[in-house]
Length: 68
Image (cartoon, rainbow, N blue to C red; front, side, top):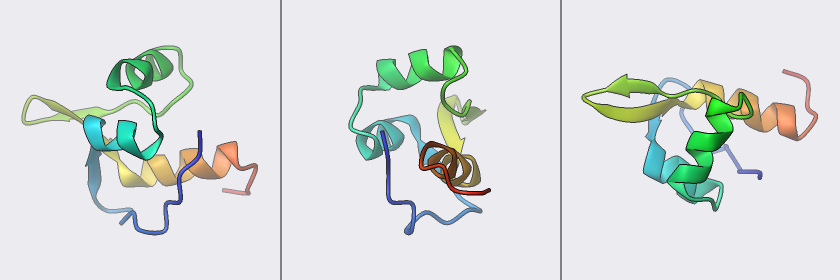
């Protein structure tokens, strides 16, 4: 599961649905991943799950074995 994060602004957020598309998995799969501690946990804004783009960028670095 990798994603080119070059277009992610670290100061913005990504919806659960968009994150699922980015990683080519279902929203249910992402939910299972973060519940098992294998993916960044989202925050809730306006009753919806959003991921901090900075968390997604750090996650991508960790799975690509890049230094943080």
